[in-house]
Length: 353
Image (tube, rainbow, N blue to C red; front, side, top):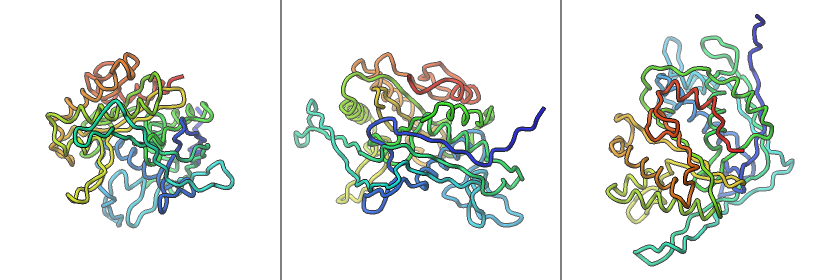
């Protein structure tokens, strides 16, 4: 049998799947280019979650230091740490030859059918208009793994495939951004062929694990922005009682309050709708009691039950809702352990036609 040529460079072209585009940040709220660092940071997060799901210990915040005779975690072997460079370089090329700077623009949708009891005003939910042209992502090998394998690690290709297919790229995914589609479907199949074929059946390592992720999709009738705003309102409302405000802000996000010295926090789930009216989202909710926010672990089942209920309301996704979650009765396909669930993520098509 002929030995396969190791992959040392990969290139894929993606395009935004809706009007919100992709946002990778910039100084003073202006994005002057599609920044590779934003996508690289997301890829590191997904790779770390994949490694933990397969039982590999991963340090927090690049705490490893590479010195002779000392061991470092599996993630830092790939993405580098003090004293060690990354295995791969990632670059992004935007299709516009002259990139026109994009100023952060959060346009809101008002829910006039709801009124706040505090001031009688209608709640507003914001969406961002970002870069809406195709981008080309290139991953090239910079050095071999410490074990000596001269090829792009399968952990990276797997994480990239899952992030593009089930997740989002860049920032502001809570405002609708980051849902990307393949310009050429054959490239999706090529990347999928480079994924890890099997998952480790053992216990997950401590930290945010892919086993804690959930994914959902469904078809929405009517105006997409109104539906997205309504869903966000209903999810936040569903998590009021008997849950604490701290849990609600942790899961749904918060703008913070300077008077009470409360910091803003990001959202633990995403929600967006593509140009064809299909809703896609993902999030994570830790299951292990030794993770940060361990006080919320006990509420996991009830919280996600309520989230799924909101998404499956008859005026939202209804019976079209598909929910994927490892080892959970909520999963549309039934309860399955990590190895089978992972295999099904790779085998089953996710994006709707």
